[in-house]
Length: 138
Image (tube, rainbow, N blue to C red; front, side, top):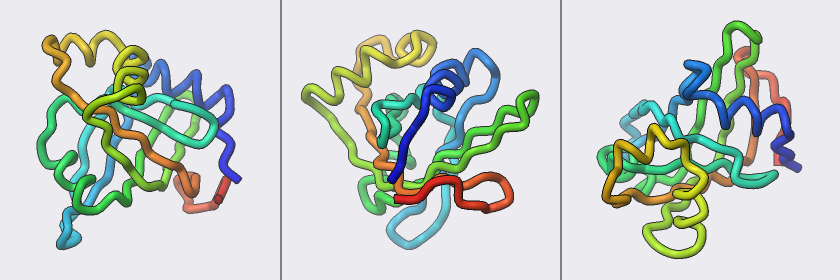
């Protein structure tokens, strides 16, 4: 079972301020990879990550076509690296979208002044370290 703990919550919630912005790995329907920076990644609950998708470009299209993603977090000073592998779901409206928007770091919301973004929830299925060791698996 996946359990996103308090350390993960604290580090992900401050990742942008700590200059440890997460990377989102996606692939389109043909398998072509894409990497995007996501400054709004957060622990949504003990089994899900979330982020505010303000750009609505290739990453959103990829997630819609192929929901399998990986979120990469690295904090060099703390020597922590996590890869969160999971399945993404996009929320363009509703309670989950509003919850994620209200919890998104201000710097990301400032880049979306009209709040046109979408929430993306990532159901974490596996967490690995930089060496590929499985730390947790659903």
